[in-house]
Amino acid sequence: QCPWGAPNTTSISCSLADVMSEQLAKELQLEEENAAFPEVVAVAEGPFITGENIDTSSDLMLAQMLQMEFDREYDAQLRREEKKINGDSKVSISFENYRKVHPYDSDSSEDEVDWQDTRHDPYRADKPTTTPRKGFIGKGKDITTKHDEVVCGRKNTARMENFAPEFQVGDGIGMDLKLSNQVFNALKQHAYSEERRSARLHEKKEHSTAEKAVDPKTRLLLYKMVNAGMLETITGCISTGKESVVFHAYGGKSATEDKVIPPECAIKVFKTTLNEFKNRDKYIKDDYRFKDRFSKLNPRKIIRMWAEKEMHNLTRMQNAGIPCPQVVILKKHVLVMSFIGQDQVPAPKLKDVTLSSEDMKKAYYQILNMMQQLYNECNLVHADLSEYNMLWHDGKVWLIDVSQSVEPTHPHGLEFLFRDCRNVSQFFQKGGVAEALNERELFNAVSGLNITADNEVDFQAEIEALEKMNEDHVQNHGKKLSMFSSDGDPPIYDE
Ligand code: ADP
Ligand code: MN
Image (cartoon, rainbow, N blue to C red):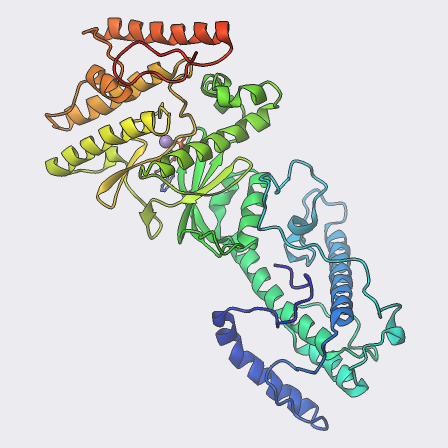
C-alpha cells in the first residue's frame, strides 16, 4: 500500500506484529539519536515525534515530493551504474530489482497488463496526488511549515542517516535542510515499510523458481497479488498440466473487510499458448453464455474466458453447496481460489487415494448426488468428470476443474454428460461398489431423461438425436430450450 495516499488524521496503521518486531530497533535508534544530539530535549512521546500539528497536508505533500525525488535520483543512479557495467556487452546485468520506483508498480504503458480486469479492483494502490495543496509553493526556504523549528528540522534531517542503509535519502543530509516532524515521521515510516516490501520482493524472486514456468505477464500478475498483500507468499507449483499450471499460496489480507481470503489458496494459471486450447474450442464456442463475445474476441481473450468460465461455474457450485474450491479473485487468465488440502499438501485425487469400501460407497453416493445437483441446481454438466478431477478431503469428495463445464443444452452437453457417467460408473464398479449404477442408468438418474436403449450404441444415438432436436429448435426459434424435463418426457419447448 502506498503510504503517501490521502492524508490520514490517525497515524499510519501498522500491525501489532510490525510494532512488536520494530519496537526494540526504534528504541535503540532513539537512544543513539539522543546521544548524538544531547542539546535537544529528549523526545518523551515515543518512537515517533508527535506535535500538535493538525494541518499536515502540506507536510505530507512535501514528504511525498521528496520521496519521489529520492526514488528518481536513486533509480537514475542505478541506471547509470547499469550502463557503466554493461557497456556494449551482449550479456547484461539488470538492477531492476533494486529500483525504488519498481517497474512493476509504475509500468502502465503496456496495455496487455491491465490489472484492472474486473470492474472492482480493491487492490489498486492510490495514485499520489500531484496537485499541491494550499500553503505550499516553491522549494527550499520558501517552504513554510508553520509548526517547524529550525533545530528540530535539522535534527530530523540528520536522523535520516539512521534509516536502513539502502534507503535513499538524497542530498538532504549534506544540505542545511530542515525536515518537519510530520515529514520526518512519514519518511521514516516509509523507510520501514519500504524495507519490508523490498525484502518481500527479493525473497519472493529468489525462492520461487517455479514461477519461471509462467510468462512474464503472468509473473507480473502474481507479483501484484503478493505486493497488494492479498497473497502472503507463493510457495510453489502443485501441478503442471497441458492447459494450466496450479500454484499453492498462503493467503494474505483482504483490502476489503467483507471478503476473507482463505489461509491457503490455489492459483490456477491458464496457459496462454494457443495451441493448447485449440481442441477446446467446441466447449466454449457453442456455449450460448459466451456466444456473443466469442466472435469478437482475439485468441488471448478467449483463453481468459476459460478462467472466467471456471470462476462462474465454481460460483454456481458453491451456491448449490457442492464441495468445491471457493473463488477468491480472477485476474485475466489467473484464477485464485481456496486450496483443497492442508499445509501445502493438496488433497489427493480420487484415483490416488485408497478408500475403505465404506468410504468408497459413501463417495459414490455423494458423487451421484453432486452430479444431480450440478445438473439440476447449477444447470451444468462437468464435462471432464473423472477420478482425476475429484479430490478426497475431509472425508468427502470435492469437485475441481470446471473450466470446460457447460450447460446441459450445449450442443454436445448430453454427450459430455454421458462420458462423465461412464467415467464415474467404471471407476466405482471397478472400485467394488456393488450398488453403482451402470453408465446408462446413471445418465438417466442425473438428467432425469428416460432413454431406454439397452446398449451403448443406441443409447448414444438417442443422446445425439436429443441434442440435434435442441439445435434445430435453436436454429428455428433463435433460443435454446428452457430445460430438459425432469420426469422423463421429451424436452419441453420454451413457448
Ligand atoms: P487441469 O486442467 O490442469 O487438469 P485442474 O484444475 O484439474 O487443472 O488442476 C490441476 C491439479 O491441481 C489438480 O489435479 C489438483 O491436484 C490441483 N488443484 C487444482 N485446484 C486445486 C485446489 N483448489 N486445491 C488443491 N489442489 C488443486
Ligand atoms: Mn484436471
